[in-house]
Length: 112
Image (tube, rainbow, N blue to C red; front, top):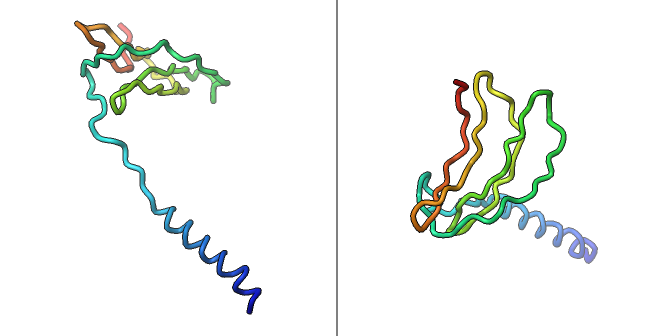
């Protein structure tokens, strides 16, 4: 019986704790960046990204950018994406506007 208490009870407690933690849900903070909003803090210099091998021939690397989350700049890493025939990728860009900065989101643009 002593062996049972020494091994089974701690295992049961650990299992119960992991089950209760697995039900946790992380919800993003509200009040994030609204597209087109002017922020007063200039974005840092772009980060250097390690670009691996494309997952398939013809894939394009869409570079990362500084997003605005929770009142601060947060790096959003780049990723590979399949090309879209007849379109080209226009990267995210921060533009100075008055005393602040405005993010123009990246998007696919049709060739002219």
